[in-house]
Image (cartoon, rainbow, N blue to C red; front, side, top):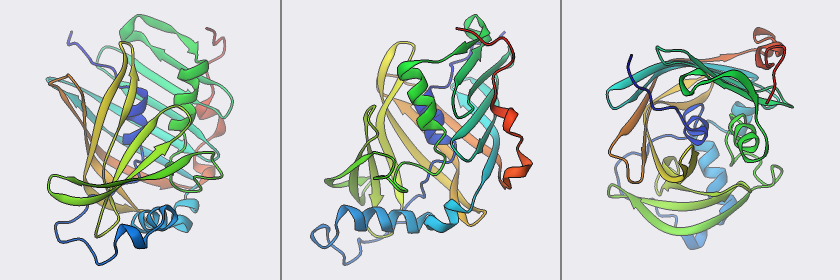
Length: 259
């Protein structure tokens, strides 16, 4: 039986509809930071992803793909439905890991870690899953969601000039790198909660395609500070759905869920 490194909550938040598009090579545009407010940068980033209206028009999404961790791999399906519901199923080859939020209760099963019963998540674990269920990402309507976004100065990603935005979701701060020319997201640096504690993470995006009028990465690489293993997620299918195509009880915990 092969070993398996379980996906972290923050990793899944980023991979499952991460609102990012890789910037293209080239010189920065004539717009300077002094001419752009945080609101300007956020608006340009959202427009580069397809625009707010296009994101709001999507009622549900299903993603299917593979995740590779060194020599190990798994297949997964993630389903999102408005308002704020999510279910992820990962087939590790030795059991199914399920994590979900039905709009009220966050729950999971992780048999590969010896946790075969349904666990109802509380406190920080619940908060992480709730944030993960926001498939349109933190920048759209960020004030209404209670987030804080500030400009963190210029930066670069592998030689590409970037603007850095710090996004505080109330449970930690992530830094989003926007291509200085296209205003598309290049990478996100933040922290992920793991069984061993919080670790610094870096997420990069590739292979961008249009899905239902928005742009989504179909390949994502994820690394953690202090680990030689790079995790790669590849989506074989991302499908925008009507709400009626996803039953509400898809996200409910099995009868008898407990702590």
